[in-house]
Image (tube, rainbow, N blue to C red; front, top):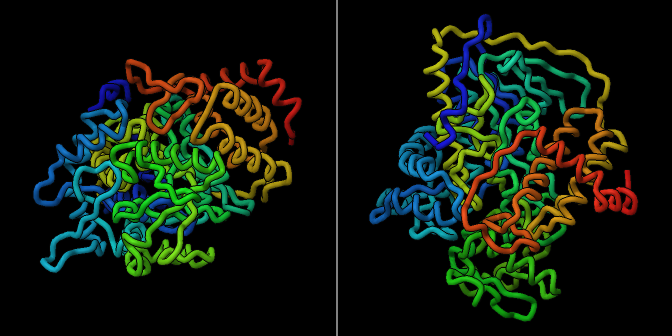
Amino acid sequence: MSQFGSSLAPAVALNGVDDVVILGGGLAGLFCALKLAPRPVTIVSNAPIGGGTSSAWAQGGIAAAVAEGDCHAAHTKDTLTAGDGLCEEAIVEGMTQEAADRIHDLLGYGVPFDKDLAGKLALSREAAHSNSRVVRVRGDMAGEAIMKALVDAAHKTPSIRIIEGYIGCQLLTEGRYVTGITARRRGGTQRITIPAKAVVLASGGIGHLYSTTTNPGEANGHGLAMAARAGALVSDAEFVQFHPTALDVDVDPAPLASEAIRGDGALLVNGEGHRFMTGVHPDLELAPRDIVARAIHTEIAEGRGAFLDCREAIGANFPEHFSRVFAACQNAGIDPVNGLIPVAPAAHYHMGGVLTDACGRTSVDNLWAAGEVASTGAHGANRLASNSLLEAVVFASRIAEDIQALMPHHRVHHWAEIDDREDLASKRNTQERAVVSLVRSLMSRHVGVVRDADGLTRTLARLHNAEKLCKRDSIRNMVIAAKLITGSALLREESRGGHFRSDFPQKNDIAKRSFVKLSQIETLAEDAAASDIGQQALEKEDML
């Protein structure tokens, strides 16, 4: 149990409702639903189940200390080092200890992890890992293969009901209890209400709040905002990980050049052919992601550009070893076998999120969270490569166990009826499209790899103004999620992990996690809008 676990209240059973509703059809949501079987579960997914999720797009794999000579203590140490002082050590230890069991669970669901000739799991090494411990599938196909296996398993499980094409809007509450969710059909007028005894947020991350991201469009922070609006504590929202090596080819979302490419020896060079990680960090290209991202950001900002040079280390093996990246390069007219791959940092993973304890419980009764939407304390200020999928399955499993223990089920299938109705607004109007464009532009310009008080204050002021124009929950939730990240970044006056302030470039002596409620961020945004900087931003910059 983490240090804040005692403050999170236990869930309370509701009479007359026997649903567990999971918002999100990625790895955390599917794994939790399968672990809850045969209890009735309803999965509500923004995209077709298994598709349009960051889980399906994950290339690296799952980190687990399963090799001879490796151990969970070493995995824990590497995670704590990458987390830059903000990891919850007990959480990390528990996660790394359970890694092998969760890998076996996935094998049981049919995930075809790579194996060597002796039948043992084939392992690769990624940035900031002291050992080769990343379990993967055909080089860069882990996410897709894992999701395919779990989707197949879910479709074969009678206790799982799947509702696709609906984006979460609000959490229903009665007093201090969450009692269900509302969701809207994408591009349509239908809104549904599903009552629930327990709600599990597994809605993914926030990458699409940025104009340059490796995440699908569904990763827009709606689950984070829904929880915050219901009163949940949010932790470490300022910590956004920017993947250093997204393909710089003007595609949205940006194709990802997997960390495993650098793990296999590819070099980072600028347009002058200089290997610029030399002298930046002892681990060179395999330094922690925040350090590599800032180095690449600097090269691009100073006009030299940044490129992956795979010619010598991988060469002709590139199409076979990294088929997905090879295809993306081909589509952009790039030859990674004989030429350089242009790269740039892109919003990739959110270390912060809805605060949870070791069981995945949030600070709101009957609400759990798992995966990228949650802040468990496992990642700290900077996620260690390939720990995200591990965290998702570990906490999804714990949540299922916790719900079963707190809310005994009598193995009778019962799904609560869905209340569906026509709503007024059906499509984004011109004004709302402009709000989305503004959010993504502001976040990339001022809440990206490098931040300062001026830019953060301007962004908060403009987000505060833009929220007044939002008629639909789906758009308002994007603005609220952006405000939570921006406000938290303004409050943290230091540089640590994925959060770098040019006006506060040093770390504070004491590492502290951040904990905020939406009401605090709203007050901060009002103050920003009323400040001289905020007023200048509202008066001089392009308005909606």
